[in-house]
Image (cartoon, rainbow, N blue to C red):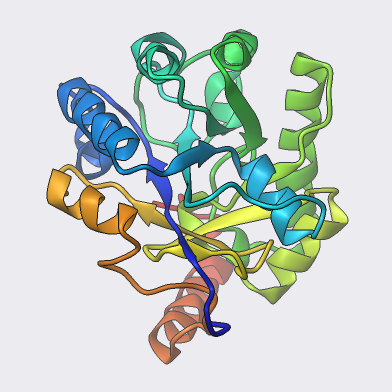
Amino acid sequence: MSPGAAPVPVLLYHAVMDDPPGWIAEFTISPRQFAAQLDVIRASGRTPVTIGALAAHLAGRAPLPPRPVVLTFDDGFADLPGRTAETLAERGLPATAYLTTGAITPGGRSLLPPAPMMRLDQARALEEHGLEIGAHTVSHPQLDTLRAGALQRELADSKAVLEDALGHRIAHLAYPHGYNSRAVRRAARAAGYETAVAVRHALSSEHDEAYRIARLILRRTHTLADVEAWMRGEGARIAPYNDSPRTVGWRFYRRTRAAVKGPVFAG
């Protein structure tokens, strides 16, 4: 990390519900937990902004406000356009939602296991509640295991579906489960995205990589003390930094498996 880079917490939420399907339960928090975490964020003195605002800073177009924080939501679970968006709006908190188009479109194809999902026609309601919309691919595969043609389709088709539904450009992408590589990052840029978020479970920073923005993934076991520490810029590594040998090795294993078995759900 560059000396003096200020940490920017970018939080990654999935479902906010009391009784989630088992496969997503680890990454689900209850509505009560969610409200309490938002209150901690507000009390921290941080200024909530969207990924778009962070993108403008990373591109040198605009400064960030003092002590920013970014809230993001992946996939598009059914709670998002309802109580979750309302809870954010009640507190005046902007956020960015990354939608898996195959999972929210009737008859769409998706590798996500069964779960209550929002509908594509509810995306406008998210924007009305102050959420910025980004793409999260069509089917939620491990992008860094795909051949070039399949990778391009996942990135371009999800972008096109959302742009058609909303009538404006979609500039931001979330890699499913954070899986990416140099080739994936190049493809994201070529597809017309201005930024892409990973996971890394690390704090981002004012000098992070625009196509590998680090996020802190919320698990049901995280406490308010964890959130308070992140708001102080503590409790996690600060990006940017290089992939570890373990991450590189895991990517090689997954690519080999996908070459034999085909595309795999990123989760």
